Image (cartoon, rainbow, N blue to C red):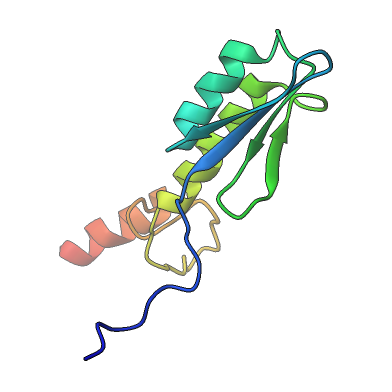
Amino acid sequence: MTRGLEPTEEYDGSIVVRLLDDQSGTERVRCPSYEDAIAVVKEHHRSVTVAKIVDRDGEVVFTSAGMDIDDWATEWEHAKRRLSVDVEEYDCPYDNIACVADDHCIQCQIDAVQEQY
């Protein structure tokens, strides 16, 4: 009797911080989240030659050789916030780009009040 399909590869889902030092070599620190990875980089980036954050797909998303960790963390927070926003589509009749379904422009608000009376 078969127990089902066995996975062909393992994936631990962790993010890796690589701390590269010219004298001591490379240290790999596994982190469960980007917040933890950012904290590791902030703690060690001054004491190593280069600190890198490698995402779950193996892509280097941060390197201290060309970026500031505080700037990168701020941009990461903004990107995370943008991805978490789910706003239903709304076409403003006045072509106001700031007018969205849950936050109408002043003219749309005036129209809504006038429709009530």
